[in-house]
Image (cartoon, rainbow, N blue to C red):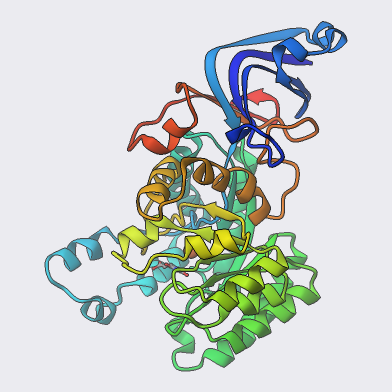
Length: 402
Ligand code: DI6
Ligand code: FE
């Protein structure tokens, strides 16, 4: 066993009396890949201390649980910087779409990339997230929109999880957009999604199923078909819901006991109530809100009053949130959405774990995975306060320094 000591621990334990579950002069005992004991050093049982053959001095660092980015589209081909530039030079979305831009251009670039190219490009983004203490990461498909390229995306996501010291959870997002070969036939494409999903599930490539429920994407009735198939396969669901309008997606997803509903700027009271009842997490994505220059704020007060847990994520994607900094999202969740720094940190730890259906992480507690981060800050609020700094000193993944 290993002892980590001389630190302040923000345990983020839900039951803790102190905010952030803060423990001054803390000790953590690591047994293999798991935490055996967490608490004040003065309370560390002597027989446990004796069994620790290795001691790490954290030199006064703040220790938090490993960060969890619970909503990303990290694997994709190409980028859309050129469209960004065209827009800032006066082109409209329509002009860009007519030139084959927008989501269609990412689908094209993703389809034409080899797995090696896709992996190399995604590795750059992954490393940026890892440098900020991310130990668990969700990656969605959804730029392939046909069996082969969706499989390729998910295989690249799995390969990243094997190569790097990070736990990758994959999500099938076939119902993201309409591919060109199904233009004008959304129901037929949903039929194709229902055919693709069981195949990828059988290959062990799918941990959860997502969809984009929006006027410009898929209707609640179409998403329902996807969710019925997912449920029949025993897969948990989640939904891009109420991002640009109130389509009733959140209530639909909650009816399938969704792990999370994401975006939610236009969430209604009925939607929030349904999520509360189902224990569905609200994943807020300040990067997309910022990048699309939205003005409609997600109803944070409603989520609080309904007791809906709030998570925060990067939504890392080429179109609406080309973001690879989860720490920046903490700041934006506070400045733009008025979350408290404690809520924001819970949003990338405890609540992000819940958004992925994971019960063995997100809090520093005995029995949980030994995924934690050492920070060069005195107080956890500094993690949300900083804008563009990276105070990460070291990340420990499953008990091993990374
Ligand atoms: N919501 C979004 O904001 C992104 N996808 C989604 O479902 C946009 C993705 C893109 O433009 O590439
Ligand atoms: Fe997204």
